[in-house]
Amino acid sequence: MKITLNSKTVEFGNSTQPTLHELMASVGVPQTGIAIALNNRVIRRDDWASTRLAEGDSVTVISAICGG
Image (cartoon, rainbow, N blue to C red; front, top):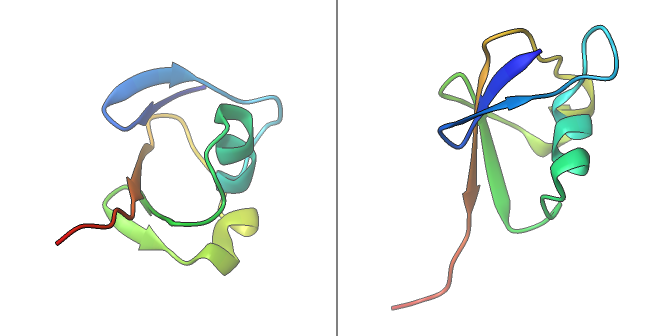
């Protein structure tokens, strides 16, 4: 399946309906210090494992940074 991950089209999916958690693990995204939006809607970390991806979904990973 093709999805958009941070504005780049990627092929992903070893199962019929992969989860958001599976995507993050496959691309090596850290599990802390980030927020994830699926189709412009923030997904709670507790829901990553149960949130299914579909063809054409758009996933945005936002990293927390320190600064002042």
